[in-house]
Length: 273
Image 1: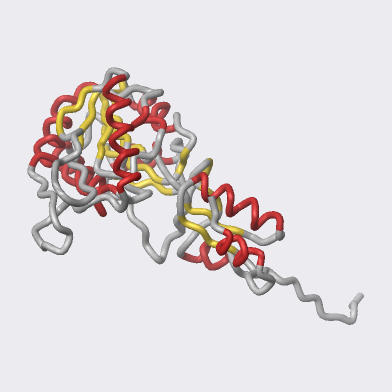
Image 2 (image 1 turned 180 degrees about the horizontal axis):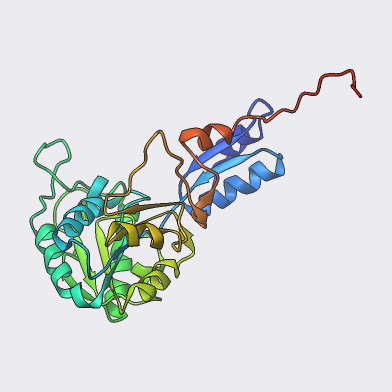
């Protein structure tokens, strides 16, 4: 929810438009206030971003990049890969490659240059992340790595790898804002796309397969941005934003500038026959 100070700023007559980054719940509150003042808004909200790994993918490259994507900022990134959907023939090989990379990560003080995974921002956020992990395991998933709150100062949570994740489980339907990877199995590419789109979110996605095939599949994915055989990231030259509960409008690039530009029509007379 928004604080009274934020609401007063949005309602201030000097404010012409609003750009907000945060959770979908907070975004809904901001959007409602902005709409009541008839002010445009751009919302960049949460995500449950899918990464599809098909049987013809470079498994080692996919595991390397997706491991990095999942642990950037201790996994506290809205565009990080969260649900990893792997085609059945390469599932076990991919999981082993990802597990090896997760197991090698060093968790510690973010001020130490050798640290790869720092702490979660707040205790309540870590508690909720752990609840999502335990609920998912209780629903039938397997925790191959991590999944336990470490006995050390700070709000740390270890890189955690869940397999056997199915639709409806907490790590599948909720945004996991921390270093937790949820691996799902797809029988084929069509099934993988169906699983990827089975979410109320639509921020970002990635596809790992033949480049031409991946580009074609990107058009079937319900996401604001899709990366083929690469990490999902923002670029100031390109528009960034989501659909569904991940928000609306675009930041960055020409589209981001146009969100806050008045397209004014000017007609100059006199009329000519």
